Image (cartoon, rainbow, N blue to C red; front, side, top):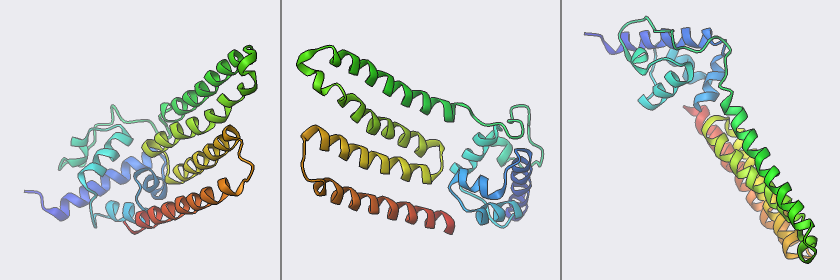
Length: 203
């Protein structure tokens, strides 16, 4: 029967092999999994092993079966593994296409409103709200696929673009009523990001 120490050692060798085959550093892999490079180093040295869900994410990232990662054999079925350096285009193209589509729809609405005299003065409003809507979409995708820093950036964009949209829509005269709440939310966003980053570094 395979002992715990031996199993950790075998898992670490497979992880190191897959990481190097993709041309990734331990730091880059850690970012993908929301762990520190120190945690990845411990896994590869056989000192510890990640939880089952993280192992599932590793198998998905490298395009191998989870059974390969959990087996007692050091061999891995590489038929389905991604070639070195290959990225998932959908993780970048899909969010961008959706964001562009949002602005395309806003452009269509703009043209329609511009040709209606009664509401032509409000024709620019679709663009005001297209920014926060696009930012929300990008925040969702960044939570699924991208690094934490992108989440902080897109949440910040949501905060300020939503505030400016409301400012122009409501015709507010004093920017203080917009700036102060947004500044508080921005600080909260940065603190949340730093806390999450600190937790990941401690893993």
